[in-house]
Image 1 (tube, rainbow, N blue to C red):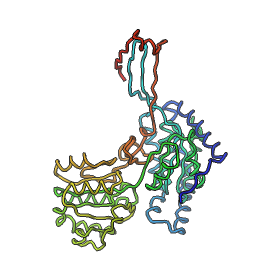
Image 2: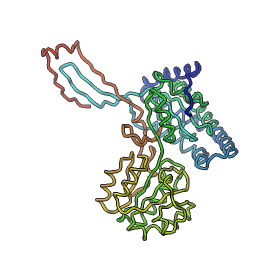
Image 3: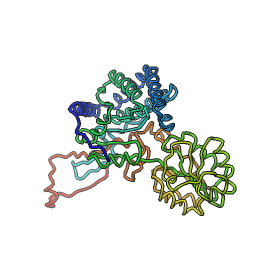
Image 4: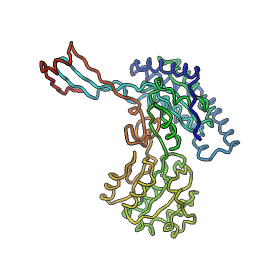
Length: 436
């Protein structure tokens, strides 16, 4: 049974309203002020690094006691090196070009009547994520750089880490022109459910989790939802693939960070290349500790565990991989259509016709040729960081960085112009394009 959605408490309404006010003030600040705020946040994170790592260690110890799944433990861990990388990411976001105030359209409707469309912040975003404490830094940096407030809810497994990070971020903001109230952290399940009723105070909700989580939120809020659902990513090894290159790409896609949502979960192999490719692939994956589950055709090459129907639909987030042989490219495309999550899918081939067909036919946010699915990441795309990866077809799609956190506004400047002059035929539109 789905939990009932409680009304926001007076305290939560007060805090959300404070985020809203701070976000409104933030949206009026210039580029330099927002950049300086991010550098102040990074300075505070560096100053509090030992405290943050210690809080994370407490979370890890509690996770071990509670028997948390290995995939979640991998996401939860925030050691000194990972924290330093996240802080560097905050500074990198500060150095990105300003997403606010970009003129996208500029038209002279008539003499003295000029229309422009410019990018503006969304307002306040609510982000619900699992045991990823580094996400707090990513989201906060992107939100403030794009002029938005943020209400965050991490998994309870990361509660100590998230609170320590938020404390540092707010201390940093206190040394800037941005109010610390622009960021808020929800700490209870009741608060995260009540977030869904904060329409009027929150402009967008971004859930980072399972399909079930995304669907639940979509079904229980009037706030727009940017869905980041399962990452069931495929790699198809075509008949014309370079076997050595394909194996290298496959290994990276699965083992470089198996807990990530962009890790490969199903390997599709053209039956013509299977005798050349699959035996070595099986040995290489086994040496890396990967458990393989194959269809009957793949099992004939030495895979000992047979895949079930559920395996094709499963995001393992672990060193487990499903393997299936297909007779041709079209069969691979059909499998991806049936079981994929429209996240990231790749093909390895030297055949340009097969490559073009795959790139055009797969309806995923990321479709790759001869490279790892692990490139589906805002940092690797040059976005600095990401608030999530959207698998929906409406934009923004794929890794959502700064440009996904702004909308636009039409501004029209006139000199006493009235619509009735045009409807009566007294005046006529020019619709003359002007330089951006």
